[in-house]
Image (cartoon, rainbow, N blue to C red):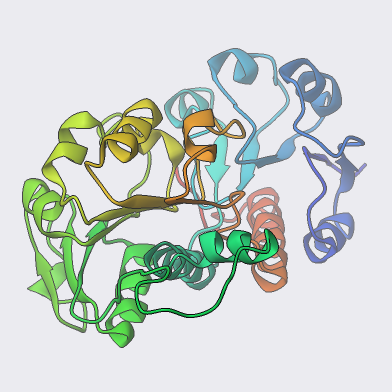
Length: 318
C-alpha cells in the first residue's frame, strides 16, 4: 500500500505529479488556510505532510498528528513550525531554500523604486483624474544614485538585493550576526553595527529570519534613530517590525515612508498603514512567480521522496 501524503493547500502540479507516482496524495479540498481541526482530520493516516507558511504547526497540533514522520514546508522560512518540538517527537522538517532568492530580491528592489519615486501614489493620482500636466515642483521623489542602502540580514536574499542595488548606484552597508566571510560579498559592502545601520541608511531593507532575537527588532527606538528622509522595506517576516510603532513613526515624520510585502498579523494589515500615502503595500508576493512556485513544489516533493527512500532530505532544517 502506498504511503499517504497530505498537502494542506493546492500547490503547482509539477510537484504533485512527482508525489503521485510514489504516494497516495490527498490535497485539501478548501482553497483557504485550514483550521487546526481540519488539518488533524485530513492528516489522519498520513506519514508525510506538505505544509504552507500560513499553517501554524505548534506543539498542540504536532501532538495530534501521531502518524506524521516528516513535514515538508512549502516556504523558505519555517518559523510557523515548532522545530524543536518536532525534533523531540522524531519528526523531520524541511523547507525550500534558495529557489526564491532572485524573485524576492526583485520585490525588495521594486518596493525601493516604488517608494522612492512614488510610483503607486502616482498611479492612484492618474486614476483619480488629477494629473494637470508637468511643472517643476510636481510629485517629487528621490533618486537612488549615491544613496545608502542598509541591509539587515546579509543571507542569500540580502546579498541578492545588494547585488541588484549596486547597479542603481546605491552604496551598500549591512548588519548581520557576523560579517560576511572574508569581509566581502563580491562588491563593495561595509559591515556596520546595528545602530550605524539605522543612522546611515537612506533605504533600510530587512532580510533576517524571524527568531526570538529578531522579533520586534524595529520599534519606536529604532525609527527615532533613522533619518527623517529614510525608507523602511520589509520582505522578510512581518513580526520583525512592530506595526503600531511603524504607523506612529510614519505619522510623526520620524521616517519618510515604507514598502511592505509582509505584515505583523498577516493576512491582516494595520489600518493605519492603509490610510497613508507614503506606504506601498504588497500581498506577500516575494516568491510569486510561476517559475519559483513550480520549483518550490518540486523541492517539496523531492524532500518527501528522499525521506521515504531512507535518504537524507535535501533541505532538512532540524
